[in-house]
Image (tube, rainbow, N blue to C red; front, side, top):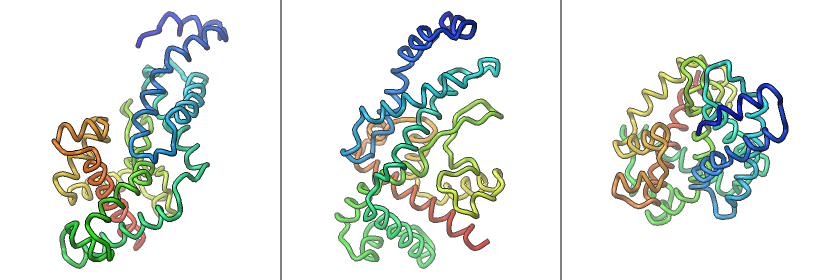
Length: 253
């Protein structure tokens, strides 16, 4: 998308009609961001609601964008669109308490088993420790997938290399545990890099394709030749493991 003529006019005049035209032209960007984020959210979360909220982020981006910094508007706008959507979801507290509790239980049990076994637990071992069947475990992993998308999927714009990165690469984490908020950026990045190496090959591939190649869960399933629901389960386990490793390490310091 190249709307240089409109941008030049808007910079000079701040004409509200030109502003409205730019907003309309970038609306597909909002729909694209909202559509990708909608994957993994409960069906009760309507795509149209995400788009409406994302437009708020687009308006904010348009108002604050400084073209003199040499950054594409899309690069600047996407994190703000995502941020507006995430802020609204958090404000609505859309994740049921039971789902949050389930997520914490799986996360804690995975960490305990890994410490005990010296390796990652299998689905059978994890299900047994939780006192449920493997079928129920897989169902639960899909149920909590939305909470993990919120925790790691938020993208931010990083000025030093002009690119978007998952918020987990920065100290300013959305979870903001008191200890994490005080960590040096490089220390957290180094630990995350190390933690990712402890994931299974499938989990590492899903994390790379989802966060860095920005494929949807459906597209990842096509690449890996597995179902979208299975990708969702693998993603959820990977994120819960990473979150548990971060908390386990830094809660002791």
